[in-house]
Image (cartoon, rainbow over all chains, first blue to last red; front, side, top):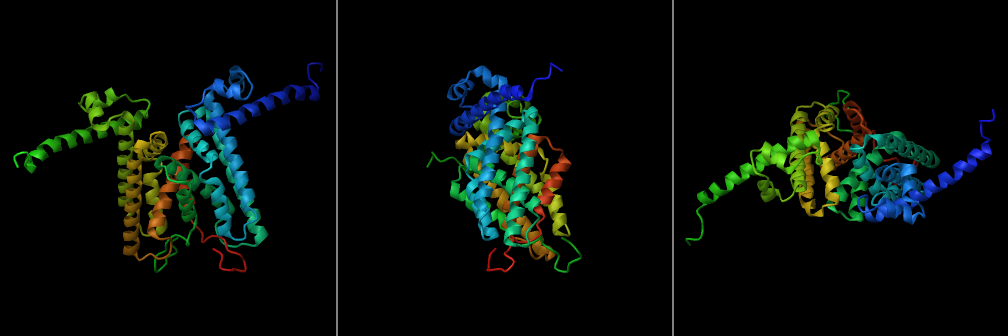
Length: 211
Length: 211
């Protein structure tokens, strides 16, 4: 079995590769946040990361693939920040407010919205987007369920649906406010109003079991 | 006052202009639906409408402005269709289902999502987007309030918030499913699940007025 490399040797090859990949993503995120996808050249990202443009091609193939991967990593980072910030909330309303203030208006959410628009025309990048949604939803579900249990909150929807609804509304608000140029505070207020829910769907006055 | 043109004469000038504008929008919508913004040339739209490319420049200035106007007109048309289809619903759940089946997966919604992404980089087109949101929300508000009153439904959120939430969720679902390539039925099911709401925000078990 001399053709099987020892694990330590494999790691020695892989670790520097992972570090370079991560350094390229870090540099890319900062530049894309500041200048958008169209405003950034592969050569500039490489230069900022102390790498060669060919290394971007090697690790990511295209600028668009690098953009989508950077945006997905960034929105997951925003989500973790939001959940950390919301965990000590004492009420459901306070929990929502803390999530919303971290997520809405964040550059990470804006990058992710642009990545979704881009992926519409680049279906080869769809699997990464799907995995990112799965993680957003499952992280949000777990974080909210834990906080709910800790505080003994009752009522409200199940945490899984609540997490999915939160992210769907956040995308809608970000898409709209990116276009209309609404201020951060307007977007936050709008998102909070959309999350508040006074009750179930309307029912017939003489209910026949309609929901 | 010989420099004031009689009204009839003014109309004779304006009406053909309005008709040409509308014909260009009709041709553009069909071509954008089939081939997307990037896949359609101004010359092709002009040819399909029996016009000259210079007439598109005259009425709309740029292909992007024509695209955004066509998308706004189309999403408002989808909204009216949805409200007409939902009006005879007998329950709130049936009302939602009819709205969702008309709106989610419609080419008009997809065009509007693309128009929003585009307007992020073209803030000169933002006023038209804002007016379109105002009309979507006010039409949805009025249609839902009328149906609620007619059937004597009670409960649920106020119609204005309900209409805003509906369109924000629809944008989020369309943005996501455009990227992941979800089927129409998956998107419809997802939207229906997000609209169903089991109750208010969670409350502390020993409520201190938290909502």
